[in-house]
Every structure is written in structure tokens, then in C-alpha cells.
Amino acid sequence: MNKLTSVTPSAKTGSVRSLGPSATPEVPPNETDESDEQLSGVGVYVHFPWCIKKCPYCDFLSVPSARQDIPAARYADAVLAELAARRAELGAQPVRSIFFGGGTPSLWRVAELRRVLEGIISAFCPDSPPPEITVECNPGSLGYDTARKLLDAGVNRLSIGVQGLDDERLRFLGRWHDAEKALGAVRAAVQSGMPRVSADLIYGVAGQSPESAAAEASQLAELGLSHVSAYALTIEPQTAFGALARKGRLPQAPEQAVADAFLAVDEALARQGLEHYEISNFARPGQRAQHNIGYWRGLDYVGLGCGAWGTVTRDGQRFRYRNRPQPEGYMDQALGLGGLGCDPERSSAALRQLEHESEALSADVQLQECLLLGLRLAEGVDLERAAARIGAEPWPRARRRAAERLIERGRLLQHGTRLVIPKPAWLFSDGIISELL
Image 1 (tube, helix red, strand yellow):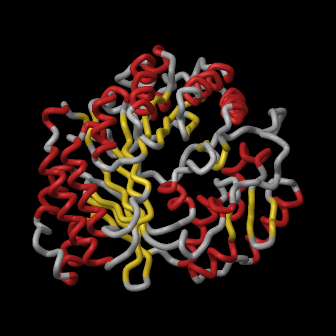
Image 2 (image 1 turned 45 degrees about the horizontal axis):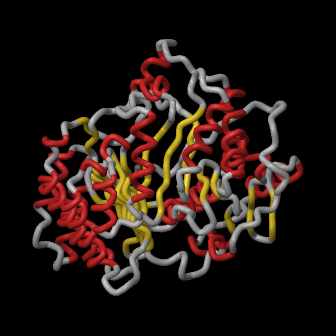
């Protein structure tokens, strides 16, 4: 997935269990210190747009297709052509992380995915140690053999869309796997020797108890996962669930039940030794998702593929772009870039045609996004350092007053130049962040 924010459960002010007494996050320095080295380089995101079936809650770009109908080789050729053009435009930079999202990238023939991965490494980091390289997988298209092939191709992290371990709930969510298949995919990934395995869970589904959400999280963690992403079910307007909700035909969990599930999952994964390092993410020590941390810290990333988003710096100005969202149109346009990689001026002009939309990001917008995303992290955001890096004013009068009110209410902490939402206030983070924007 190429989405910058994940879902935060909201809860009305009332009686909810605490996330724990620790207001000042204690996290390893190597994971929280924003050194110049950690803030350099780019992430690379590759979007694979096809899936077997569109889930009714999904608002990502995905195109249902039978596996045999996916133009795997042609799509790899197109992504590599775009890569060459973007590499010419951006110049030599180290790469921090590589992420294959979708859609369902585990449907891509591994030989073609490997070809793209080797092209990225050759373009950005031929002489450097391999970065974090993640592939998103659906349990229905991941077994031991596929996991081993991905490992042999250089992938060192898998993210598996488990979403739940109850067959009835999985059917409600439109998943094309059952609980047994989900558990089997996780076991296969771990047993394959893949260094790092993550799983996604959805909680806050109508009829699910907080105890059930916690039990599923524990059951997955016990299989040897290094990371868990747990998201509350959110109804997006442009989805099948959104249409049902507008008609009053979609069963939804009460807000308090969602909040209780959020707290129960936190407690369960803490008992399993996973650190709650971001509102929707948990990791064992040293196993945080480095690619997503790049998003949350507002760093540049190159988007490749149909419908991919990217945020890059060109000639000192930061831009966000999105590629054409139609697979055939994207491939036709990208393949036309062939041979332009050695000519930066022509490559740049052709890339603008490939992009469906693009906007220059002002310094104020960039700093707002640093707050929006960085405050989701347990260690928060060093506002003044981010502002100095971007060239923005960290403390306009309205933000200063809002911060003072939040600090007085115990909803915000300030440690020097760093702002932190204390864990007991994470349930209210959406409102807290909006006040600071």
C-alpha cells in the first residue's frame, strides 16, 4: 500500500482503560535519533495494481484480474523504464528502503519482481549493503515456495495481509482466504528463513469483541512475527462499504467497542514483547518498518508504477506526484520513456506526461505533514529541527496557543524541541493533531 496515514480509532471522552503509565517514551536511541544519515537518501515505492478480488473496504488502487491475465513482464519493463527516467532526473542518491505494495504484489511472477528489484538496487545502491526490502503478500498467493523465491531474489521482509483469524469475519471483509490459509502463510514465511515477517490485522469489525481482537493479535505474534500492523476498520466513501454505509445497510461496531479493541490489542502485543511504536504499528526491538518511518518523518520517496504516489525534491523544490492510475495507459506511457534515461531534460519532460497529477509543496504544508504523521510515532516529532530543515516557521501564534492548551490538559508533552502525544492520549490523537495544524 502507498498510503501515508493509517487509521486511528477515535473515542469520546469517557471511561477507557489506560494504554500504560509511560508518558515519556523510552525507545532505543538508534531508532529515534534523527541523525543526518537517517534523514538522507530516498525510499522507493513500487505499486503493483492487480489483485484477485477487490475488498469492499479497500480504497487503494487495485484492479481485479485472474493471475494468468496479468501482463507481468510488460509491467516490469514499464517500471524499469520509469526508473531509468526518474534516476536521471533525481541524480545519485542512496536508497533507504524499497517497498512493493498494491494490489497484491505476491501475484507478480517472482522473476519479474526480481528484475525490477535488481534494477532499483543497480540504480541507487549498487555498492551499499541491501536496504530494507518489503513485499506485501496476500495469504492466498503466498506459500513456502514463493517465500523462498522472494528470499532468493533479495527480499528481506514480507508484510502479509492476514486481516483476521475468524472465517465469518474474513468473508464479511471480502477476503479470498480463510483463517487456516492465513496462519499457513505466516508459518510458511517464517519457516522460509525470511529475516523479517509482518502481518496486518483489522479490528473494530461489527460483532468482534475486544477479547477476540487481542487473542488474534497474540496468536499471530506467537508464530514468530517481528512486526504487526493493527488498523481499525474505517469506512472510506469511495468503497463498496462506503456505499452500503450511506444506505444504512452496513453493520458497524460502536465507537467505544473500537476503542476497547485498540487498547486490548496494545496490551496483548505488549505481553508478547512488541513495542507499540506508532499508533497502528508494533515491533520487536530493532524491527520497526523503516520504509514507513520515512513517510512518518516526511522524507523523500520515489513512486514507481501505475498510480504510485511519490514525493521528491527537484532543484530544491519538493513535489508530490501521482502516476497514471490506468494500467494500460501507464504501461504505454512508461514504455515510451525507453532510451531517455541518459537525457535528463527529455526524461523530465516525458515524466510530466506520465504523471496524472503533481503539486509543489510549500514549506508550511510540509511542516503540517510532519506534525500530522510524526506525532503518530511514540517518540513524536522534533518540530524545530523539522522546521529548520524545511525552512518553515515552527511556532505561529495559533499553534503555540493550541500546544499550550493541549499541554495543560495532558494531551501533549514537550521535551525540549520535541512534541509527543503521551500514550494514554493516543485514542484522541486525530483531534490533538488537528488542533496543532
